[in-house]
Length: 88
View 1 (cartoon, rainbow, N blue to C red):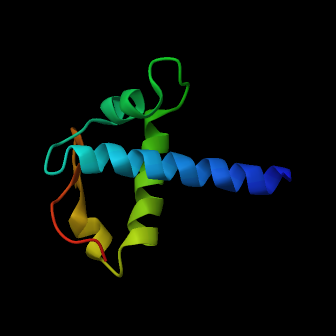
View 2 (view 1 turned 120 degrees about the vertical axis):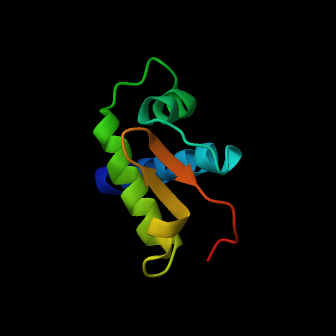
């Protein structure tokens, strides 16, 4: 598999894993650290700010317009929360 294709697949899988973590705890606030721990465990070396980029991509890919910002809420100073509802 070419490098860019493998990297794109890896990114998509990571986004899916983060979405599954959020979906398993709908309406609960999850810190960036909790998301990282739930997705890859303690051995995973990633910046907590990388989670912000993943969340941003999920919002754009899954929801239309501003719906992503309403459905995956940023709870400042605490983390993220997927609000219950139907996917677009």
